Image (cartoon, rainbow, N blue to C red; front, side, top):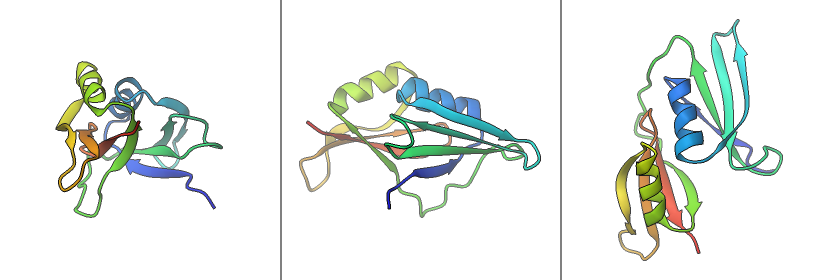
Length: 127
């Protein structure tokens, strides 16, 4: 077995695609409209689906926003320099909600950004 994807429901697919591709640097891997079901699926990631786990962005045409609830945590991305990543994300219009710095009770450097729907993405500095 291997992890294939994580699905997020998004209210504005164009805004979400812009965030994940232009701000976080992912690639749009595939996109498919399902007119009978009134939804669109878009898959984004840093590599091909047959090699890496990706994100499935699901846009239900009749829903503009979702209650994130309290069970969702975050998506984590490895970055070589969390401080530089925050600067780059902010320059591209992204929302940094926790500046880069050591995690509480540890030494790993982390930061958090938020996508247009309010989903949290953790940046973990890896050498």
